[in-house]
Image 1: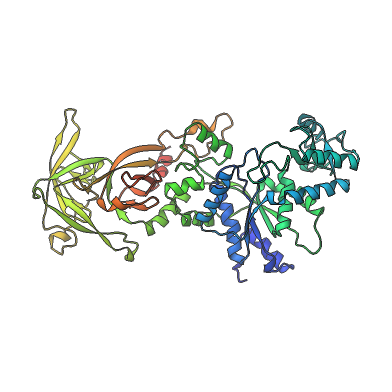
Image 2 (image 1 turned 180 degrees about the horizontal axis):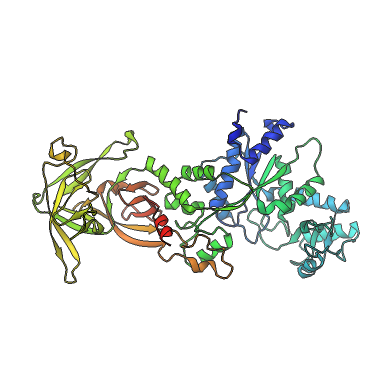
Length: 561
């Protein structure tokens, strides 16, 4: 295929080298192999985009293979969520596979290892095995059960399979090298006893393969050409190759494991254990809470799959781990929403404005552009009346010359409407301004073509008609952690860095064009940010989430600090 050399990442260079050295493009096959023990997060999104992106680049199939070898943590709920997330990101897999599909084959191969003198049943405790494995600088010592006869090993292994032993009584270990400098090669465990029902095989099996035994063998069965893993699996590559050495035939392609670095995201954690703690302790409402870095959380918050794919493409892949600032992800979210999100008006902290010279009881419908970035988006009608809401922050009784919003004696333009002038204000007993009285220039209507309509004033405000406004719950989401690396502090728990202001709920007032909005709709509240309709919404009670503000407000905070 025609690939621009300068655009290739190091994984693609490996593939191109393989193609030059004998692979054909028909040999290429990739896979995304999640364990169904939790919801996918932003780190998985990068891996998904890498593997499926390679499939698209090379016209190669990509399998979705569930690494379901640990029934104590895996559930069908997670399988369904993972499939939903991959599809939502815009990718389609060639085959839906499961490590559990291969349990019988993996068992048969393990039996052959025993017959070949390359595996044995060990009856030590886990503590004894850990001790006899040695240290990185000292070789291990052989298990007292390492030289059991083939016949005894076969009998014990079959009894393990049949459920005759309790958990921890026996394991099957590969017989490799107890003096290897790579401790993973010091007779690693291949099988353990688990009396747990599996989400697919129920109680058919009482023994389950370890990841290192199932990983390469699954790749081999599926004829995956390039098995791409994160850097923590680099020490496992030697074991991956040893396992393949025991069964590869010359007429089949041998998979290659290659590693790339994680891209960690600032102001978040992605450890499933830590994410689960956030859920269990009620810091968030669930795995799909819009503050969570899970794909389902980002989807619920209003992120688009295009934005996540663009983010993954921008950060690329590398050989060294680093922390990517979450503001880059938020930039891509804004950039895409700017192109597709209709503009509407909403007021989240209302202050009533009475236009005293506008006829009481009258109303009119003004024309408003839906999206200046999209000519095909058309226009809508927005009602205007004597009483409107503006944001409290948009009015000051007194202000300096740099304040270009509404102030006593000053003028502003109402978006898509008229120029108004603040004449007076009303305060409550505590001195808080509760109403502003204004006059309007009836000849200044936007788009009317009059000379007054072309008159320039420095401030333009969004607003909604009080009579027509839709009251709704608006959830103002922010970053879940107020520290860039909340889980990198050795002397502190990551929970200490939870942002207490990561969620604030307010009552907002929306223009009536939003009354028919449905779950998932994304809009820009003009001058406020991008929002979407949450899954908690009903036809009678809309709930909006703030996806991202219009600008990166955290950048200014961090500069001050």
